[in-house]
Length: 248
Image (cartoon, rainbow, N blue to C red):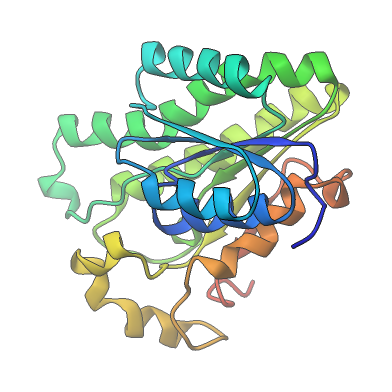
């Protein structure tokens, strides 16, 4: 355990399991109190955070709905006194050939992967501006740079995440707020394991310089760096944490 986030409050979306849970636990181990927004129950993550001696709250939130996000933001303010760190982790990654993607598919993935980052940032940036300090960490994907079939709608959202990160950083830097993104490779989680992605682990790992499957713990060090004072002069960047899948 450390103290790099001592006294901070971190909101992590999609922290009931997988990458979000790993980040929430790492932040708690470094002294942060945690607020979780997820459609799934976050009982396991809550228990882990409390075991680390930190305060944690959670709510079932559809992060693509402004009304849900606004209610959650008020809950965090009331119970934790505001937010210093926002990790926009939640997202979906359906696999479907372009000619089978419907407009409803397109709208749904953009709502969850892109609109949510906008809505969550809109809800929590005002408090960060008041405190003149904040960290926003968005999850993008290494697929933006790779030749990945069946992911036209997904890769488009991940490109939007990068653009959002770069543009928002430019507007918030004067307020002591940094905005950065992490771009993982395919990460082994219960969700990816249960989908067709679970059959792709070895093939994707073979393209990486580090030839093993990425796990959530591989991302927590970078997330901690970007959420802490250590990255005070880093903003608008997208950091691939992908085992060297991207090497250009």
